Image 1: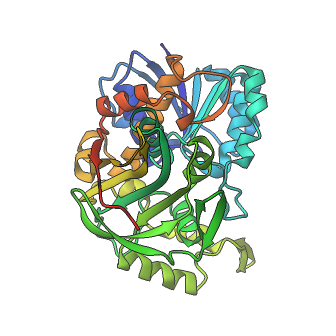
Image 2: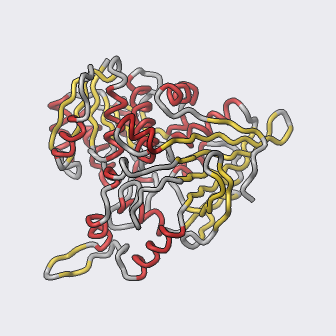
Length: 399
């Protein structure tokens, strides 16, 4: 059917590539591009006897001209951006210049400010509409699948949705004293930022990780969940009509938080440049360089993830509660594609979103979040490509 340019060569990219190759009727040819071309080659080397043609390329995604040149050379139908969120805008600019569809899994974040929000990318709406191409934002798991879960619940189970609690739990164990399951720089910036949630038309801010609950998760058990800000709250607060409150919760072990506090206390999580032996370095980027590469964790990680949405609202005049979630096993993911479940749960939805655009099912000019499209074809594809969901009515609520 067509070609996809995949920018990035980390753990998520590895999953996207494997899943594209499981779908050769849609992805006839792919190009994996990264600043470090050896990482692209390493992904390609894992794939034997696949029908999809695989090409690799060296690319500095900070440089729009380089991205344009590669797009013009490869001529893809879509660019799948699984690089760093700092690079979203340069890649979107390249897609506009070449008339190619765009997809990412995380919204833009300026390198010098720990602030991630959609305003920069939503500002591209008229440009993409005028160019007649689609930009699909946040087609990972959260954001991504969690947003589609909400749209699915709104379509099939509720007349009105009033409350949403998104819960992201990782009960995996990689055996290291301290490591992050995705890009350490992005992970630590998210975790150390102030929490925020939407209630009655306004944002309420909390100190980082100051609000904690215990929630008993299916197949995982009771875990400490902490209120955080996460980007899908911003779009869901707009796109789920009648919402009164929406919150995001994530699990962290005491061990992880103790290490993080020490690193914060000694300044290692700072994004302010410091001078060291005549050079300017950013402490958090240095910390990223010495921590284990998340792409290397797959073979060590055991346990499961559980990510889902607890939704409350009204159906036929009566109150209804509904819990929809996915459970993913780290070892099963590694056996299939060579990546752990955190990468798997992000990479599979990226392929699905790209597939729906390439098939014309989710294709319309402009910039969109995933919940703005019909959720049903996405939900069916989740079952087909390794992320089946579970449903419960009348679940325990987070008070």
